[in-house]
Image (tube, rainbow, N blue to C red; front, top):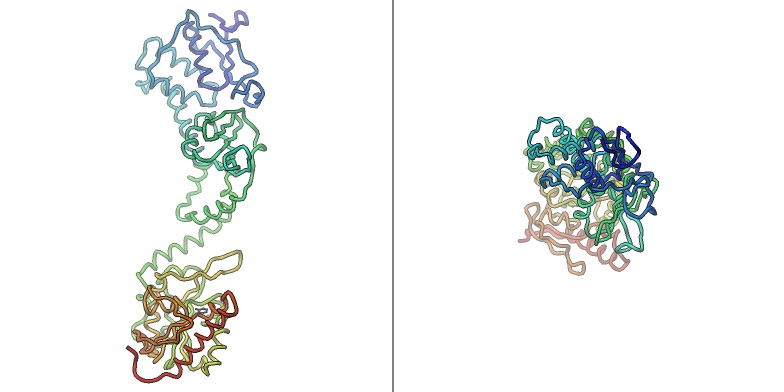
Length: 494
Ligand code: URA
């Protein structure tokens, strides 16, 4: 036996590798050429934490660098390209045992077993395949779980660098840098791992020694955005905890911002599943299936409570029915109940209701004279903390809710209908309806609900008007419309 690296007649040749395939290849070439069997070589990889950036600058430069072994007689090894690729992949495995396996595989192929890798039952091939699989699995996880945080960096393009800390199971950061370079070519990024770090600057990937986790940033201003996004795509029906733990081992959790909210998302799973079940039951095309035929207003009100005509029935709010005289001459149609209306179960009793009340008084009308309802019966909103922020219903919400409006107004048969705001106008005249000219006199049109149908401004639009002048114009239009609706009588308008 020959000790290639000195040290006398030791039974073992100790080879200190830097963990790269290139370094292994350099040594194995000499060892195989010298007929040193794998069993007589002790391969070790220098602990990455022993590496420092100032030790020559190259990644994985070892302090304990052995004297490079000469390649006796200048012998070269020639291996099939596919075999080299497989050996290269396996060489990223962290186990020290990998090197002896690879050494044996190299020696056997070089020794004439050219088809060795086709023998899937051969113990060395079995081991090689196991190492390769582990690397592919680890790469897959890295692609999925690396999370970048944005840092200001004057030297980076656009003054920002995206930095991730990650702990792969194997030494794959250099190998996988190619994947991230292709996926994120236009941003400067760094992936820091305990084994080594990869940095992309738009031109090339630079590798540097590994770092501790503390070197990585923990938060950035995009994190909240990402967490919101994750919560919004989180599908409770897909949660399989065991699979999740297997796929996303706990060791990755601290680098994943979304996992910080995992507990609360998981706690919410039963409620959201119930919501989804209800959603799948409801998906009738509209409220039509829930509207009793020929019903009077009180039967309609009762039936409305269990409407599942659209997904708004699952948003935790109750449906607010219209209210007022069953034979009112004038009906008002709003958009949807607001926060106050949903709580009290009555239309137009919040701030917009107060504004409307003023206009009604000025027009000489009282709520008791009217029938007041909305185009959409549930309160569509966004949650901001504990606040429920109004969200305009879509054309689809309006159209799914239309059977309720049809039934209510068929029961009331008003002579005049006043549409408050664009949503109400669209519910009656279709999606192309636009807000009226605030300076033009209100003009009735015939609709399927009433021979004289007006469109005017919503009281909430008056409250939101950007200035006093605009507010007054919208207010005047609403008042003029109510007056005209209450005074005009006579032949239906065409
Ligand atoms: N806005 C509406 O459109 N309807 C209400 O009931 C309250 C506010």
